[in-house]
Amino acid sequence: QARTDVQTMTGKLVESAVQICTYDLVTDDGGQAREKSKDFRRAFIHLLSLMHALMCQYLRSDWNLENICTHVPGKHPVQDSHKLPQVKKLVFSGAYWHTILCLQTTQHAQEIYNNLTPLLVVGGLDAEEKKGLYPLMDGGDLYIGHLAPAAVRVETCYAWLHRLILARWKAGGLGVPPP
Image 1 (cartoon, rainbow, N blue to C red):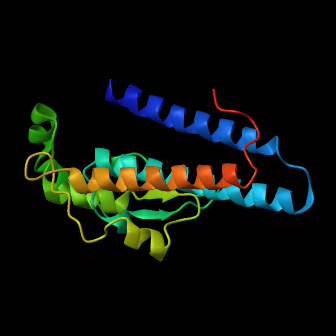
Image 2: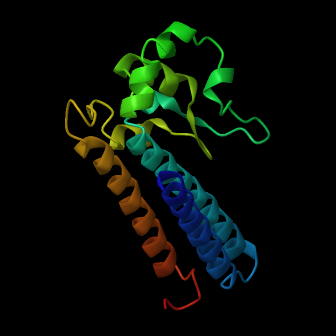
């Protein structure tokens, strides 16, 4: 069920990217307007990618913004935890039965896994964005503390997306009326 929900979330984000980019192409009348449209689409894809990474961070209880890295086309991270470099079997095997029976792992093993499996963002995370995402907030985890900081990060990026869309619309872009 959880995997289906994550794939549904990702599908909705992709659908919104396709729609916004297509709607903005309608207003493309050449020259300077074409460059503004291209810049808008790049910024939109970047923020959507960042929001996706922040959502995934929230889901995996990862509060470290250093685990968000720049996406490099053609270079994909290892997805299978058994193939990760630098992982000692002891880190995960000590909690193996606990993980299987209780569907959780140790905080230490989770932090190691999060560090070894960065979340990729188109265009990366610049210093100003990082500052705006409350880098000093620690979210705790489901068993130890509250989850508000991670949710605030997602909501902050969501607000950035809305501001970008409204600014583009006011500048004459997005020539298709809303539904």
